Structures are given as structure tokens and as C-alpha cells.
Amino acid sequence: KLKGALFDLDGVLVDTASYHYLAWKELANELNIPFTKVDNERLKGVSRMASLDILLSLDKENRLYTSEQKEAMATRKNDLYVQLIRHMDASEILPGVVSLLKMLREQGVKIALGSASKNAPKIMASTGLSAFFDAVIDGNVAANAKPDPEVFLKGAAAIGISPDECAVFEDAEAGLQAAKSAGCFAIGVGESVNLPSADVVYSDLTLFDLSVYF
Ligand code: G6P
Ligand code: MG
Image (cartoon, rainbow, N blue to C red; front, side, top):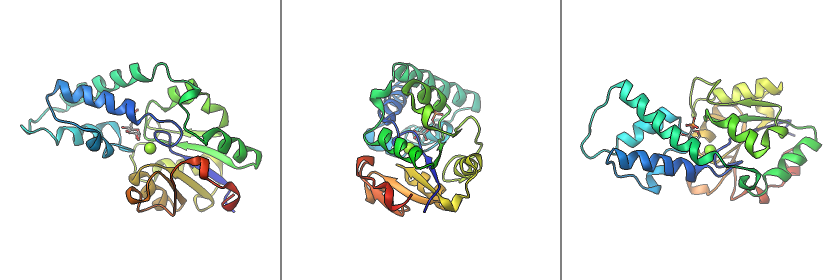
């Protein structure tokens, strides 16, 4: 039986993908780069600067930018994103999440966040999710983005559970690869076609049966 649960944030606990998309789309418009919702799928789970590089790779004119210019673009995107998430509350927690977190706590399972986002603390606080977590590992404390296992290794260490006794809940293939490299059991949330590295996939967390794993 597993003793620890490590959660991704965006797309697993809250649906922020649409806000990330709107902010990237606005930046893309300002730069005159074509950018669609399908392109946005490639940014899921990917760090802010790596996401910017993917967006700039879609530029038909292949313009090159200095690192200062790229920093300014990433800041612009984040300012737009922060405006969009300003009013987030508990109503934006995804279905099944709160009851799962409650049941895990009741069973004494330790819970940590493993997210690439530097905005995780804001979102955890405004939605009330912080209350369920024993540890938060996010983009402010991790140097390496998924598929590097850093956030999950640090998450397992922070709750004092060996990674092979932890489950990771992830909606992105890069995150599932990170979970497997960390030695965790990898639970995909979404569509199996997009999540080949998952040990098991649930289309949403209302369908998750805790007693099978914990
Ligand atoms: C998560 C999201 C990505 C986002 C990344 C960095 O992994 O899935 O879409 O780019 O976090 O988020 P941040 O809030 O630091 O820009
Ligand atoms: Mg995610």
C-alpha cells in the first residue's frame, strides 16, 4: 500500500490551463505569432521559460531575441496570468479533488505538491487547498523542470516517505515521466492517448478508487 501522495497543481487540482492559454495567446498576438489551443497542449507541465521557447519556435519569421527581451516577454505573460488568476477561489478546484484529499488525510497518507509553477503558493492559498498539504514543492524551490524528477523527489523527502511508496497525480506526459524517473507510481488524469507513461489513467478524479492504492 502507498503511503504518500504527490500532486501536480495545474490540470490536476485546478483548471488553470485556460488561464495560461489566454495569457500566452495575448503575448503571441502582441508578437504576431500564430498560437492555438492545440499548440497550448505542448506547454502543459512545462516551465515558463521553456514554454516561451516553444511559443517563439512557432514564429513564421524566426526572429531571434536577446535573453533580456525573453525575460521581458516571460514577465509580460506572467503579469497577464496573475491578473487572470486574481479572483480564483474554491469553486475552481476540479471535481473529485477535495473528497480525495479529505479521504487521504483520514487514512494518514502524507500529501505534497509537486508543481513547476512559481504561482503555486498564490493559487493554493486563494482556493484553500493549502490546508490539505504537508509540503509544497513548486517552481520557486525546484531548479529543474519536469520531466526531471526533482519536484517529486523533493516532495517525497519533505513528507518523509520513500518515492516508491508515493503515488504521483499528473495531467501531463512530462510530469508522468518525472514521476517514473523518481520511482513513484504514476497516475495520469486525462486521456490515456496523451499519457503513455502513466501506470494507470483516470479521466477525472471522481472515478478514483482510493482503496486500490492506499
Ligand atoms: C505548470 C503549468 C505550465 C506552466 C508552468 C509554470 O507546469 O502546467 O503551463 O507554464 O506550471 O508556471 P508559472 O506559473 O511559474 O509560469
Ligand atoms: Mg499539470
